[in-house]
Image (cartoon, rainbow, N blue to C red; front, side):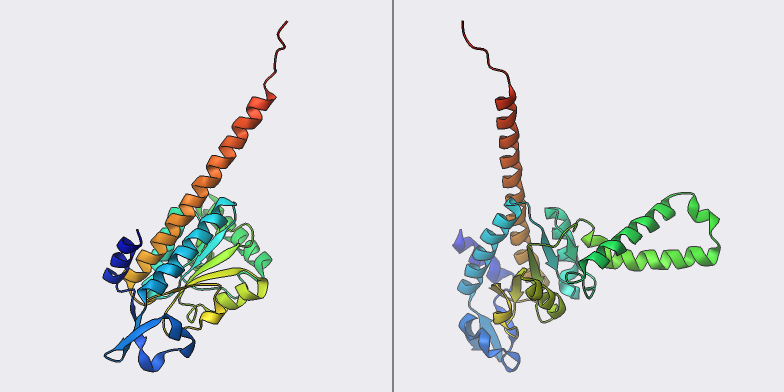
Length: 250
């Protein structure tokens, strides 16, 4: 399995880091070599980090906890949205709103406003507003939908964050660390691994690299949720069996 994974990672260009002049010295243990002024990431370290992260995320999902996927850079946003939807977890793919974790109550109230706007737009009430007010409501809705739609299912704080490029998402990482929320991240050679709980060394600028990593992590979440569903079903069946009356033989 690991051999197949290494082949897929190399084909996706996961091993290509940044220019050597941009590196963070703390990434030294994850770098295999330097070629043409580019650092080459040790794919064995990528596999180790990926397998650890996959096992952890599967366990988190199996417990019924939330995992927030975060990736707002152009190369990651579409993948984060697609895989977040696929595995049924909240995501942020456009812009990180300050206080999304540390001021979670306010974010929940904004989600209530988003639902209110959708109710207005879908009913007959919208026609009672002036054209200027309708235009204003439409702008407000588009902005809120873009920023908050992926967080609709986040009715509580997540157990962990899955982050693409913690340098880009430094505010999200900072909030998570402040609250003691675990951070799993795809980190390139210019990142600081000390800020991450579970690091996956790899190219965080290549669309193919991001797609492969996030897909594997989302598969782990789906496996964990399926595991949780099976446990709940077994418990329900056990409770139903226990509730059935027993008849003593005469």
